[in-house]
Length: 97
Image (cartoon, rainbow, N blue to C red; front, side, top):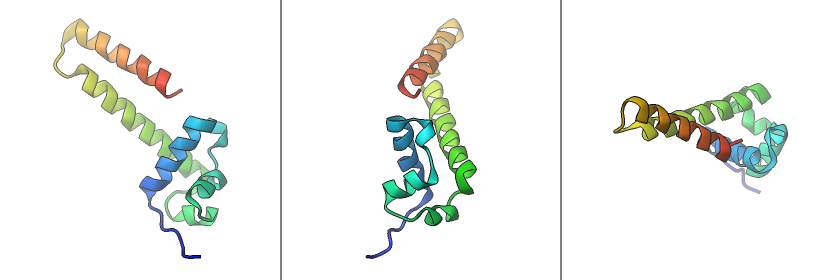
């Protein structure tokens, strides 16, 4: 069987699917490796163990939240901007518990 090549982006996307579908308690190197059809040891060239995996997922979540908030506040100012940011934050939290 040929080796499956993965990169950090594929790893993070697989991890996000696991978190979304099964919850953070199921975010393990073994589960991500299984989703990518690779051995868990193959992930170590992309993340520093379980802590690194969780860090990458948290970084992506922060990036996605920041992008959502930034786009919600474009073109508005003052109290309208605050309301738009608060709504975007709440909606993001509901979509990504």
